[in-house]
Amino acid sequence: CVEVVNKLTEEREINIGLFNSLKEVLHYLRESNDPKLLTLSFKWQTMSILGYRPSLDHCCRCNKRVEEQKDMHFNIKEGGLVCNNCIAKDREGCIKVSLYFNKLVRKILIIPLSTISSATIPDERMKELEKITDLYIAYHSEKSFKTD
Image (cartoon, rainbow, N blue to C red; front, side):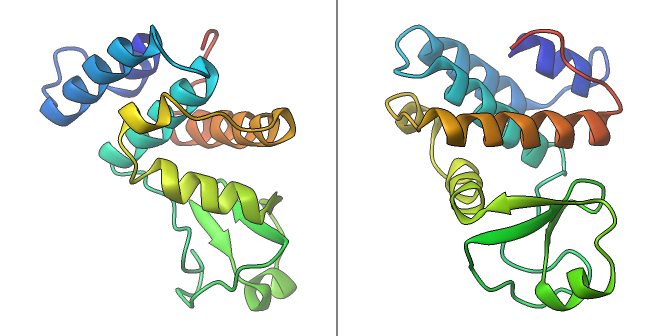
């Protein structure tokens, strides 16, 4: 988690919200049911704090409300879900994601890390979350992470 903060912020940058979030995640990592889920949640919350909160309710292209369905499309570069109308016109840069992913990230962005520390998710969902999280952060930070 410290590596995430180091890679996403400038040296000596002051960000009280991010500092408090880092302090909280380090505390809860010791007792977490699923440290990987907690770490990925911290990454999404960090991106949100730094101004890279993904659009998960409205299309990141046309701003229309995105209907929930089994398979959805997420655009890493544009920072959010793409509606069916926009995806029909241009699929470039879009990754198919599950409804579960969308709901999970929405919850991650609003639920305290203390609550997330007691949660677990199925392995298949963890793989999807990890893949999209790493792609999203790598693109928006132009850096990739060696460790979790």
